[in-house]
Amino acid sequence: MSDLDAAVRLNCTTMNRRAFLQKSALAGTATALSAKSYAQVAGANERVRVGMIGFGLIGRIHTRSFHGLKDSCQVVAVSDCFAPRMDACVELVGGGCAKMPDFRRMLERKDVDAVVISTGDHWHGLQTMMACDAGKDVFVEKPLHLFVREGEWMQKVAARTKRVVQVGTQQRSAAHYHKAKELLRGGAIGDVVSVQCNFFRNVMPGIGSPPDGDPPAGLDWDMLLGPAPQRRYNPNRALYHFRWFWDYSGGQMTNLGHHSLDIVHWIFDIEAPKAVSSSGGRYFLKDNGEVPDTQDAIIEYPKFNAIVQFRECAAGAGATAMGALTFMGTKGTMTLGRDGFEIIPDKKIEPVNAFAHIIGGHPVGGPQPAPEPEGDFWCEKAEDKSGDWKQQYIEHAKNFLDCVKSRKTPHSDLASSHWVSTTCHLANISACTGRKVVWDAAANDIRDDKEASAMLTRPYRAPWDAELKALIG
Image 1 (tube, one colour):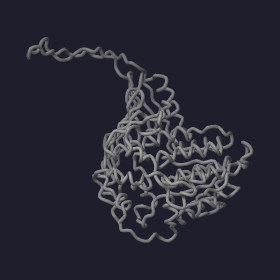
Image 2 (cartoon, helix red, strand yellow):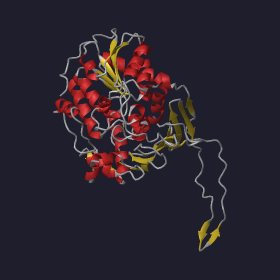
Image 3 (cartoon, rainbow, N blue to C red):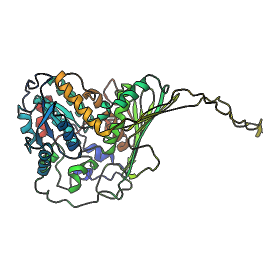
C-alpha cells in the first residue's frame, strides 16, 4: 500500500494530520475548452437555457426549481456519471432534455447558456472554471471549493471570462433572512458579542464498511473520481456517501457548517477570520468513513467569536433546530433559521451583588436578593416565521437567472462565498493538525505554520491537471 493509500484510510479518531497533509501537496496544473463569448441571452425577455451537471439529492431539488421557472428558463441538458440519474432528470422535466454522460460535451453546446453544478465537492472548482471558460454562467453548489487555493483560481477564471457565478447558499435569497440582516446590522439586539450554530443528528452505527469491488452498471467511476486520487470502487465512496471521505469533501464542517457561517459572513460583510481553533474526530461511527462524526470549532472574527458544533452520533434533543443560528447581543438574542427568526429581549436588571462578601474568612452583610424586574427591556421583541425552505431554492434560482440577464452580482457571489469555504477549511486544518491556525490577511496564508499552510492546496489527478493548467497558466 502506498503512503497516499495509507493516508486516505486515516482514522479520524486521531485526526491524522499526516494523511491530510499528503492530500495537500502543491496542486498540479492544467487543457481546457477555449473561451467562448457570451451571446445567447440577448435580453430580459428571452429564456435562459440551462444544463444540469449532477442529478443527485440536491441536483434534483435544483432541477425542480429551475424547471418550475418556465417563463425564465428551460432545462435543456443533463450530465451525470450515473446513467439512471440522467433518465430520472429527463422524466422530471418531461422530455426535451439531452443526456450527456461527459459534462464537457455540454460545455461545447451553443444551446446551453448556463449550467447548474450539483456534483461532489471535489468537482465544484474545476467544473466551475471549465464552464466559465466555455462561456457559461454558473450556479454551483456549496461548498464552493475543496481547498482554499482552488477558490482563488475560480475567482481568477470567472473575472477573466466575465461570468456570473451564484453559489447554492439559498438562505441569502429568503426574505426573512434579509429582514434579520437589517435588524442585526441596525442594532436591534445591540452589539453582537457571540454567535452559535449547531447541527445534530444520530446516524449510528454509521454507513458500514463494504468491501471494494466493481462499480454497478451505468456508473462511470473514473468520471465520478475526476480530479480526485485514483481509488478502487467502494459503494461508500460513490453518490451521496462521498461526503464522508477526505478525497471528495470536508465533511459536515464544509457542508452544513458552510450554510451557517455563510449567513454570519453575509450579514456582517466578513472576509477571513482572524484565527480558528477546532477539534474532533470519528469517535463513534463504526464504518469506513474518514471525516469527523464529532467536531467543535471556535471562529475568531474581528468583533466576536462564532462557535460551531456538530454531531453525527447524537440527535441533541432539546437543542436549537438543526442549522439555526443564535446571535447573542448586548440588548437581546436572535435565533435565526430557515423557518424564520425571533428576537428575545434582555431584561434591564441592576448589577446588584447577590452574594455576601468574604472578609477574613467570614461573610459580611449576608446575601442580597436581586430586585424583581419591572418589565423594562433593552430591546423590542420581534418575530418572523414566514420561512419556507422550498421557496428559498426557487428564489435563489430566480436571482441567478435575473443576474444572467442583467449581468449584476448575484446574492451568493463568488468572492464572499470563497471566504466562507475558506473558514470551514481552516477549521478542518486546525482539527487535523491539533493546533490553532492564525490567518495572515496580508500574506493570504496561515501564519507561521508550514504544515498547516501546505493543506491550503491539493494536486489534481491526470488528465484533469492539464485542464487546470490551461485555465490558470
